[in-house]
Amino acid sequence: MRPCSLLSLATAVPPHVVDQQAAKATARRAFSRKNLFDKLSGVFDNAAIATRHLVAPLDWYEQPHGWADRNAVYLEAAEHLFIDAATRAIEQAGLAPDQIDGVVTVSTTGIATPSLEARVAGRLGLREDVRRVPVFGLGCAGGVNGLSLAARLASADPGSRWLFVTVETCSISIRLDSNDPAAVVATALFGDGAAAAVVTSGEHSDTRITGSAERLWPETLRIMGWDVEDPGLAVVFDRAIPPFIEANLAPAVDSMCAQLGIARDEIGRFCCHPGGVRVIDAIESALKLNQGELNLERDVLHDYGNMSAPTVMFVLERLMKKKLPEKVLMTAFGPGFTCGGLLLEAA
Image (cartoon, rainbow, N blue to C red; front, side, top):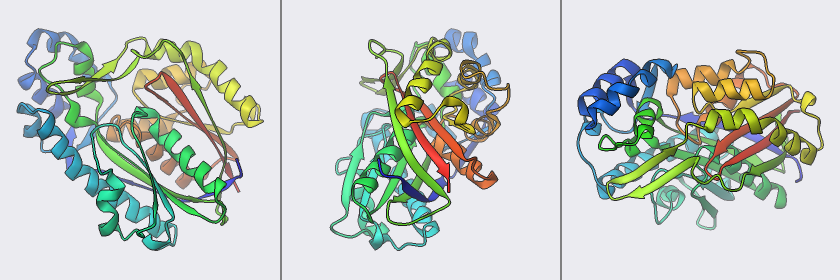
């Protein structure tokens, strides 16, 4: 792909904040399978999460909700988060909304038809001829793969400016009626948030996107994803995720580096999706990084929990504020099971 410029990056979170001990107390009170919760409640204490932002007040999660209720909360919150993150990204890029030529929207935690960017286009001030690419199903990999898609579209149309927005409201999928251990883990991990960026191949900035790659493993559909059930989405988390990453990440990264035309030791820093503390540990082990080298990932997880696709963008935002190394490889795992990679270079 033709290198393109990352003109801006902005993040947004919903207004309701819960600390981890309050979340644990609420879950213990509301979880219908008390024995299961008591057996697994230590995950709240070991998750290395202090606070999370939610799209609904804490007492909302204690009530039963079906598909219609959950998706109504998703639509209202996602539209607000979309506008918040997108407005900041466009302003940071020094642009007006009518200078955006296309929008890539990534979201997997609710259903929106018309899609989110269509719902907010008028309020945001987008042109009537703006090109729209809504993407569903990427899960946690959506931050990397969505930004990669926006960069490729910008690269293919020199001079065009593309807005990438990812919005996830993971918390509305919390299922207190479930007897699946993954439901308890999700209750301890999930937060909500959004991120946006503007990319173009027609202007120069301090950060360039120079390539992308992806690795998909066959026969791994049950490692991560959603099951669609009557009360709402049910999370699929396999306990094998950390050991799978530890065993398979290094050869996947080496393969992606070969595709990108670089050696792994040329990468000044990895920028990874912090899906959980054990996932971060597995990444450091697999890539033979110094323990604690992914400190920004741990900080984001501590402050926000796992927000799915936007989370890696929160990490990149902090990394850019500290000064981007010469070469950075963004990575994120998602349903598939897949690993997305995006190469960033400091100008």
